[in-house]
Length: 163
Image (cartoon, rainbow, N blue to C red; front, side, top):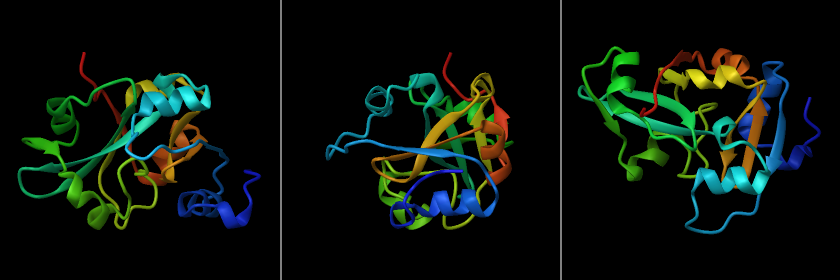
């Protein structure tokens, strides 16, 4: 289990512990306006292909899906739509992120959103013993197995990135 001081735990960490999921956390210095996942990977000395960003999309009927992809990649919206069995999806407008999920840009986690959404994790996550996702606030990452992340979020693996 994690050795994080209880006062510094995020809700994401508490949820992981409540579900018996083994994880570790890593912190990094946040520079305002710097929300680049590749920079996060460099600061934490992690492979950018193992650091996953959480993207929220809206479909043509107003429904939402969550996609987790490596920070070094771009989301292919057609693949995301296909994986979620929707006709079309587009990125959620940034101003809607906090009210919908409870998270801000640069601190959005697939774990512990205000309500559950269909979640898809890029299939490349399975190549790593552990992956990193936001721990629910800027400057904090949680490292866990992708299978544990799938179980916690009800996610499915899918091919989600631009070739």
